[in-house]
Length: 512
Image (cartoon, rainbow, N blue to C red; front, side, top):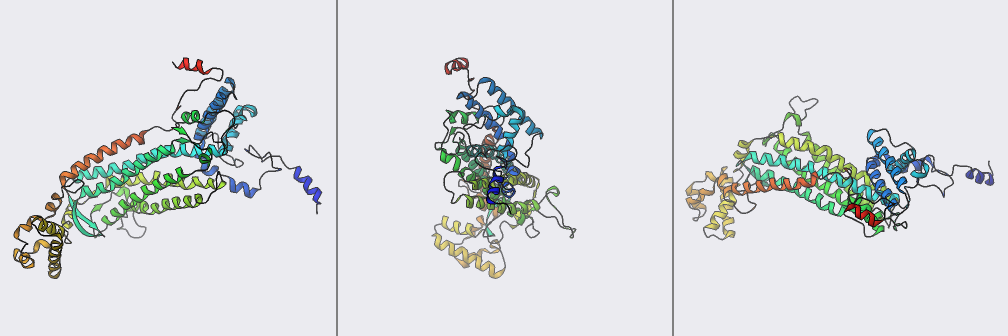
């Protein structure tokens, strides 16, 4: 057995820092245990942030130069090394290694390999992984929000196209899955389009809060090296820097909020998909799905299954789970940064990835499906769906609605007793139920008359639905502007930086 003295001596013989490049280790006698290293590693999910990390490093290098901590030659060499590193990342030449704890560690290793220990080692001054990751996640998610918005609008436009093709076709509207009142098919389809457009509005609204940069917050208290967080924020395409450095590094409400919006997208798509699943049954027979968006059975040759819609319904639960898990992680964290926050990324990344695969399939399913207008029209007036029209006809003829409701209900009861529909009642039948039911009531006993009568704003009357369709087309086009905005990686954003050797006045003169 080794003595206590021998054990202590052996401790001091260990490597003074973890193997490979590490962003910490000076106060430790050795590297982390293999189990800790395996637990800590995050490159398998945060590598997607690599280009955003490099963009942040460029802005940070310019901030260091502006603060007098890099001269012009050093800045040029640093930016050149970062450009070469990014090219190698994009080409797949440079990748994370097993020894790299996270994307930041891997990229610092890559920078040092290209710029050398002295120059490469200068970049980390004045920043922490805490403010880095808080910034990078915002940059990445802001880009992804625009991508998702475009995919959502593809579903919206598919619904709009189907609504336009439906024209004045009528179908049964339902509440509680029971026949309620006739509506236009276009009205029903647009009822799914508007919530999805509100989801895009939520993404755009979220972006206004995400457009605030935590860069410069350091570990939690800010930096002492004279760097300008507002300038870095502008350089990275943000509107401003955070007001509070502790909040900047510790807050993840921006991630949670986006996770909610993504879950809401999934829920709205799931509702649409559930409707299509029901419509696709033999009993309803409202729709035929295209073969290219259907699957078969391994044992039943006749089967044609609505798998896209079913997967959409199932994946909504997955995104709700992502949101719930993230909120549970955040619920009791003390200020400021805690390693728990490593767990903020996988749930929101999963939500983004899921919608990126799901939404194109849903838009394809909707755009290629064939609606059976004749079948819908046949069922539209059935199930006593014109009972409300009878009650409202009575109201228009001076009958209090309480009485009109009872009279119309009596008509339904008589039809149920005899196994007939409302329009099968004779004039004598109506008069026997109530003398105020004159033959004029027949003017509302058609699905066409029912929908035509609902002319208020937002109603299902054909004239109102045509107007609604035009507004939906215009709104979708307006929202496309947000979806088409370029990536924060597309090019330099914000002000041009003066060279370190220039005075502010000299730089201003050049800009003029």
